Image (cartoon, rainbow, N blue to C red):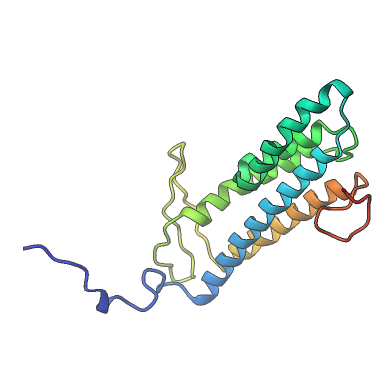
Length: 188
């Protein structure tokens, strides 16, 4: 005869019960910061595509392509957004960011960590509060780096820096960042 899990005997907050609440709070804040980076990239894509000038013969085709591009910016994940952002910056002659490929490279590297944080399965922490999440990417690479609160705090701070750099890429070009009341030419 088969058996079933005795749900009444599971530890409170199973399967996350082995980590301290501080760990889960740090993980949640870090994941949320990645979500905000995705939103900011979408707005930057909007800013660079909305301010690009077109030849009169290009306007109709550009307008038809714009809505699907913006829809993709709303639904795409971080790695894809980084690629669309880079293309939008490169195609806009008003863009002043000089190191867009470096910034996009950093975002793509961060996306790999984001995938681990969002999709990893968290085993029990060691005595130092570190855990190596079970995660294998599409290239069959296995994550081996232990993660603790400090690691998560460092990643979160790094992503905040990426967010600021993306915002700066828009405002340094003279445009007001979409959704803000900051300085620069408003996008109408």
